[in-house]
Every structure is written in structure tokens, then in C-alpha cells.
Length: 80
Length: 461
Image (cartoon, rainbow over all chains, first blue to last red; front, top):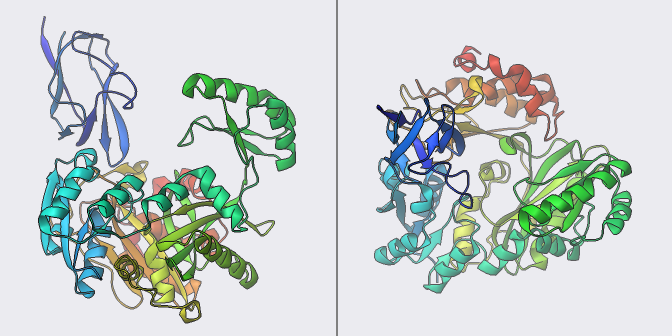
């Protein structure tokens, strides 16, 4: 088992769900496949999906929902 | 009474604009800001500044308690909400008045009534303002819907009452399509929102967006003529001008008078905008909505009438009567505003929260540039991409377009990409020059031309 990190490609605000009324894309402990959406980054009212780059299991989120983030910042960690 | 200290519950270029108006009126200013805006021009320019939260707007500019706390701490006696954020939040307007401060805008009840589509439509109809043909209320009975759709005339839009933001809208081109789509729409609305109610509206295919600026003090009401904002991308205006090239004098008078009648019928107080769709082919106009705030494109009106709308709305909030009568307001020349957004027009208008460098501002006769830029300023990624508005004024529309083409070449933002090249190209376009456009004109134009909007295109001409 190796640890990998999912980083934000953009600066902006991080969201864990598609909208406030909907459940989070992923929770800690969830299995993810490469290409699965784990959150959104809002840059100037434009939303970009953040995707897992490999298969694995999410072990933690490094930022909270609606946190401000910078490019390259770690959003989540996974076991692969 | 009058206002002595004004808190600006907004950011960006409109905060700068409001600070300028207040300073000219001898009013002290308090700028609230998020942690991401500590280095903004508005914070630098205001007499006082108070940090109200972290960068995301939900935790700062939209936090009513934080804004009110800052207002109380600094002893402000009025709050200007700008546009966006809390500008059309009726509860915020109530809360401001509740702590004994003046809200620069109409009352919470007015915002509520105009913000609700059905009640705004009803208010317009009571004032004899034409509305888009459609159902007056919710339709639950599909047989009645079929009959009404035929009366309205196709194409007809079917909307879910409980929907919003374009969700659940279907367009029926004819009666057969309507009979098929309406039950689908009702079923979908029922499952998505728990409410299967629908309403119907005529689809006006090639409409212009024309809006009338109004001012009211609760007793007297004037219009400041119209602006046309038909050049839109994803329903966002990018180029606004006034007067509209499409209106005859007779229609202009009818349109502007109808806006004044609506304002008078609801005893409007403040600056407002009545928005219409205008059908070139029939010459008919239809009310769509009323915005109870100052708008991004207000400088177009300021250029062609000489009225300072922001000063006027602050004075009204302070209890002053309107300083102008309708007979004082004359239309002079033609003005165009273009929105300089931090976006890359050659790359599908991707947001571009970059750093301003080698900054040069457009100037000279008939040019106004409202903006938030300075050398070394990093555009925050958290908010709207609007970083500046270039406004040009000329004796004629032709002269204004030539002036725009000239002024846009003077704007330089170094490594920060903006939408400026789009406007250099639009100013050269034959259809734009002839005023042959409608609200669906720009997007197909962009499909063909966006890839040519490189960085230095504006500078070459």
C-alpha cells in the first residue's frame, strides 16, 4: 500500500458536494477509481471537477468544505 | 437627516465607485473586506476598513452578522450593498434598517415583491406594462395547459414553478410537441421538487435585451433612458450601450414611460432597472424583471445623461428628494461599456486569476475606466472575474465605436489575460457596427471567432 495525494490544479474555493443540498462526492474510507470526482474547485464562479488519478481508498481530506485553496495544495490523501 | 458615514458591503470596482461618490458628497467611508481583499484598491481608498472573514464570499461578503457588526463598530449610519452579494437580499435590507441605519436601496418588502417573479409580473400588469405572454399562475391541469399554449402562440417555454436558474425548462415548437413535453415536465418537476406545477411563457427567439434606468424618491419618479445589453455570453452581459439603436422615438417614449409607471405604481425609492425583451420584428416590448440595485452597466446612463446615479441613490437613502425632474434629463450622444474580465478569451474564457504587470490605462476624450487594477496586483480567484469597465462616449454610435476601438488599444495589463481582445474584434465587426444583433448573436459568433482573440490583437490596431 502506498499513499498518494490529490492536489488542486487551481486556486479557488473547494467544495465536497455538487451543491449544498446534495451529499458529498466521497467520504473518508470510500473506494475511488481513477477519474472519480472527489470535489469541485470554484474559480471566479466557474466550477472545475477534481478527479482521483488512481484507484484507491480515501484516508483523509486535508481541507474543509468551502475552504480557500491555492494551486498545488493537497485536498485529500488516499491509499493506493 | 443625511448620511455621514457609509459602509460599503461589497468589493471590486463597484466598491471603488461608491467610495468615489461618497467622498464627493463629504461622506466618510468604511470598506469591509475578506482576507483575500486586504490589498484591494477599495480598502486602500476608503477612510476605514474592517476585515469581516475568510476569502469565500459565503463567510465574508455574504455574512450579514459580520457586516452589521462592522457597521456598528465603526459607527456607520448607512450601508451601500453595491450589486451582487447582499444587494437584493430583503432580509439584509431589513436588518440594516432594524439597527437604525439607512439601506442604500429600496425597502426589504420592495425587494421581496420585485424579486418574486409572479408578484413582479403582477405589479407590471397592474401598471399596464406589457409582460411576456404566458400563464398568470401555476397550471396543474394539462388540458388547460394545451389550450393556453395555443393561445400564447408557439414556441412556448414550459417551466417548473419550483425550478430556477434555467433548470427544468423545455421548449415546445408546436402543439404536438407541447402535448408530449408538458406531461414530462410536470412529472419531472413533481419528482425533483415535489411540486408538479408548471407555468408557460412565450419564447421570443430573436429578442434584444433593453432596460430602462429609473430613479425614485417614493414620491417622484424619473427614467434616465434605456441601455441595450444584447451582447451576452452565457446570459452574462459583455457589452452594454445606450441609447438602443433598435428603438424609434415613439417606442423609446412608450418603453421609458412604462418603466416610470411601474416605479410610480409601487412607490419606488432608489435606483432601479426595469428589464425588457424587445422583439425587433413586431416592435413589441415585454417586461421581464426589475432589479432593485445599481447595475454594473450604470456608467452608460451616466455618460448619456450626465446624472451621477450613485450619488443620487445615496442622497435618496439619506432622505433627500430627487434632485432632478424628467424635463431636466436629456439624451446626449451614445455610450458603450465593455466588461474587462480576468479571463482568457482565446481559451474558452477560462478564468485567469493572474497578476497585473506593465499596467497602462486608457484615457483621452470621452473615455472612463472604472477598475481595481494596479501593477503587481494579484486578482483573487474567489470572486467574479470583472476587473474593469471601459466606458466610451461619443456624439454618435459610430464615433463611440471608433473611440472604443482606440481606447482598447491603450489598455495594457501585462501577463494578466483579459477579455479586451474580444472588444477590439467586436468593434471591427460589421454586424456590431450596424447594430444587427440579439441576445443569441454573440455565442455563435464566438464559436467561429474566439480562437482568433489572441493577446496582442487589440494592440495592433
